Length: 164
Figure 1 (cartoon, rainbow, N blue to C red):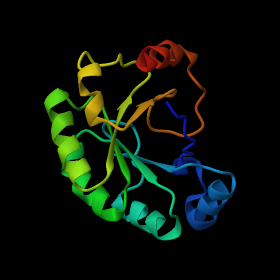
Figure 2: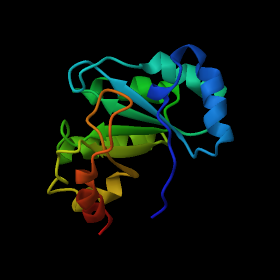
Figure 3: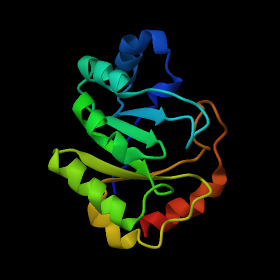
Figure 4: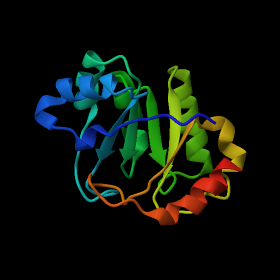
């Protein structure tokens, strides 16, 4: 397992994204994490495909598009077309079949699929059986939606379990 550093652009100065991206590149980031929330799954509204497209023009780093949205299937193609390299969907809104469907869509576009879990969500019973469908596991250490929250150490046992 390789740990990768992916700073969230949500915490960046939104009026100066080009320079913020340059700063994380200079700091050695492996990829850029783009938080997308719809105001339903997560309590605020953040970036969309246009932001991803703009970011794609200013960096060669992979863009991990974290879809904190209730119906990710409605937007997969738009974020792929915008330049997302990894599309990360939430276990809370997908079942095993939908994850397989998303995997086909994302992988056929030559991109990667991630699976995210809120701090309070256990690993799904189908997690081990679907490892071949996911390229990244994101275990949130804060509740989704807002930057600057305190780390929740209660996620550490889930992290250890996911490594097994």
